[in-house]
Length: 240
Ligand code: ADP
Ligand code: C5P
Ligand code: MG
Image (tube, rainbow, N blue to C red; front, side):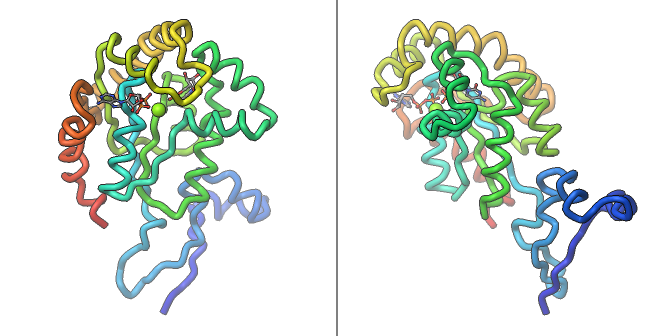
């Protein structure tokens, strides 16, 4: 039979004398707050959503092909694609309270405050039925990375880095033709500087942790995907 369990951690259980359940739950990290899912005890198995999700961060400079390769990963492995840039652009389009500030920062190629971006990602993670995610264009800075760990309470399983020469990135961005306010030569130059100063330290951090998979991003889309595919094919968790 199915059984519904509210698996609050012991620490929270002991403090819940002082807190309402709602208050206690809101103090939990994102994954712990998925605690009232149905489980199948007789199978000795937890359904997908109860297990920690498989998280991939997808990094690379502007125009390195992150979004393009993520589309192919979605098709092949059924991963859920969350693009930090798309989530921010959606806030601008919705005219939300942070929309105007986000627009100004994107026009300048600057990084939006981590709290804003992480909260948008958190909402997507919490409302999705998926259990394997590609988080594209994030973390863009050490501050982004630390905010994710603090707010979400999770680390990526793997980090994919599309390594692309600057002149190739510039060429691709100028040809993107999606009407983006930041796809012009002045903003691209700023984005490349920001990438080098703020994103490379994050890439080095994951390299030291042994989580980084670097892919040469020069070649056709299909050629590059043939280098990306084996990275994911080797993870049993992605076959579920
Ligand atoms: P990112 O998400 O890293 O900014 P995109 O995936 O949006 O990059 O790609 C930027 C542009 O380059 C798009 O117009 C895309 O169609 C094109 N593009 C992507 N991969 C390649 C490739 N391997 N060769 C040539 N053009 C590419
Ligand atoms: O990844 P994408 O090219 O779509 O990002 C566009 C812009 O969105 C970045 O140049 C930056 O201004 C903003 N951004 C951000 N923080 C992120 C991702 C994107 O501030 N983590
Ligand atoms: Mg993109």
